[in-house]
Image (tube, rainbow, N blue to C red; front, side, top):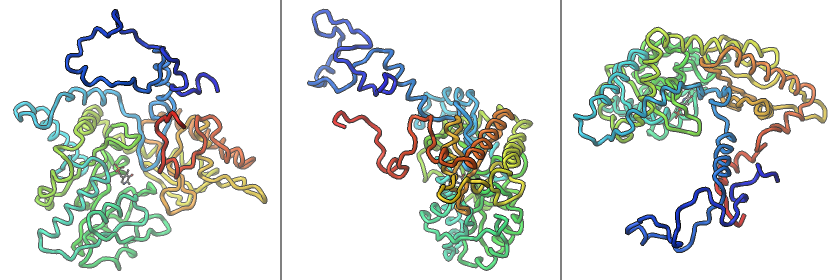
Length: 470
Ligand SMILES: *Cc1c(COP(=O)(O)O)cnc(C)c1O
């Protein structure tokens, strides 16, 4: 094993130090006061290494992980876009703020919250927002609580079911169930869209509403949205908009104008904030005027104070930075980038639904997967693993569940044409490799520190720390 592959514990040499502390009499001459009582009797089992060892250790760890600062990250349904560094600087201005400090001293923060609310209302067509929810799924739960409350306040307690298309993100039915609503699946038509005729027989006095994202998780615009809104409203239900896919609509079309009554925005997907590794996020929930009172009853009940304030500051900075003129470019550029990649690869990958997409699209595996008598075919997993060898993050795979070999690509609006071209070239190369010798893909990745862990084991029983006995 080379020096560079060793763990920091394996580099340890007894007595080696990174820094010297003066020790004239053998006792450290630092005044510890009463702290001395807390001294441990035995030294901790830490590696004994020099400063360069420590610096290299942490630098190496930081490079083991893939991040959007290091390369293209086309993870569909997640919007892993580049977020300007200035949006990281602005929250630092509020670092000293405490939610319990005297109101007189928090005017700036409160002004920022109402400014952010004005921006979100202008961009979505909603009338009021709460910033409490800390993620998209948390926003869904909050929004559904508002819907339940709205019906209850009208004395209508029979609405216990909520419609969710089969293409929905898994968080939708999960949030509904947590909120005590029974999710009812709406089947998609062959074009991947909600068919009003399939919806009609499901409607009735027990329906609290429908949860929809538009564009949907296939990246397709639900073109029957006006009819869907009329049908659901006609039976007394409400429309919930899963705003995780707001990106292609920013500055183009507003959920409020499509007939939605309640929605969340994933600030961490649409308006800056790096969100790899699961956090922190912000899922503010907006409502139309008729739901103002129901919102007031739920507001403040799902998290402390104003949720993840730092993420709201980033979103505010991002929107201000783009301004009225440039914010309108987000949607069109995200849409253009996705269609460009889709059209450039359609001769190599199966396109199950052939239509203009919005910010993301889904392939259903390779056209020529190399599979022959005695030669196992290259799957979507194999393509994804091979991409890592070429320095690209893999797209979302095996989601949505509508197809067996789903590969969901979302390039975002922040990548240059050169980066998109590079990604296309890599995917074309991988497709050609598969056609000739799928085993090359099946054993990929070849260049990463870890190849193919047992994904279930790695998620359920991750080994995250060094144990000396091991
Ligand atoms: C990401 C996403 C969610 C969930 O948002 P989180 O912030 O991850 O909780 C919900 N719906 C869709 C369509 C998404 O892409």
